[in-house]
Amino acid sequence: MSANKYSILLPTYNERENLPIIIWLIVKYLTESKIDFEIIVIDDGSPDGTLEIAKQLQNLYGEDRIVLRPRKSKLGLGTAYIHGIEHATGNFIIIMDADLSHHPKFIPQFIELQKEHNYDLVSGTRYKGDGGVYGWDFKRKLISRGANYLTQILLRPNASDLTGSFRLYKKDVLKNLIERCQSKGYVFQMEMIVRARQLDYTIGEVPISFVDRVYGQSKLGGTEIVQFAINLLYLFATT
Image (tube, rainbow, N blue to C red):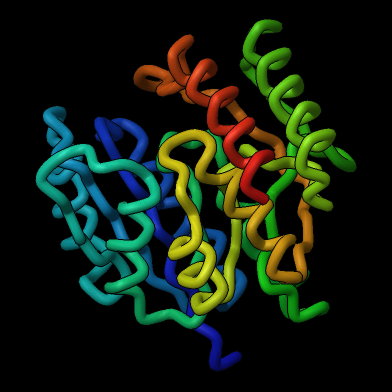
């Protein structure tokens, strides 16, 4: 067994239906691959009782497997990761969505690829190899592709999927990137990759299939898209 330990950060907000399934899948795939890991659940004061479910899961899997680090209210993705990193005991950090859009079966592939090339970060990509998006309507696909295409032209980041949030980082690399990031929300993931390129961090990519959320509401709406465009231009001006 390798000395590496992987801390999986799961920021949650109203994910009570999804949390038991995603955690079960993570435990299944990582245990089968004999990977040393912990899952850090960062719940931002979900009114739907996500934290209660998380506590039950902690009782089931044990406190060394499931670490609960809740916060009082919704404070944004970037700060959720900072909060999670502070409590992470692993030397690698995996970030993913708790809404089942990211399948944990890809995590061992991320880890293998990272080991093979000693990458600073490995990113799941929907836009390469047999990666893809399932369950999105045409408009969502168009927006995602468009955002990605626009970013490629403006920022030339050497990565094919910028707005995805399924990634593996060396812990110190992630810390360094987050300290430099200005953006919040949706654009945050993109800025992380752009800054990584600026700092000459090495980036590996694993094709993933992204499945739109089964339960609950998508967090991406019209205002997010406007925000995205503004932030993209800001990034273009400052990088």
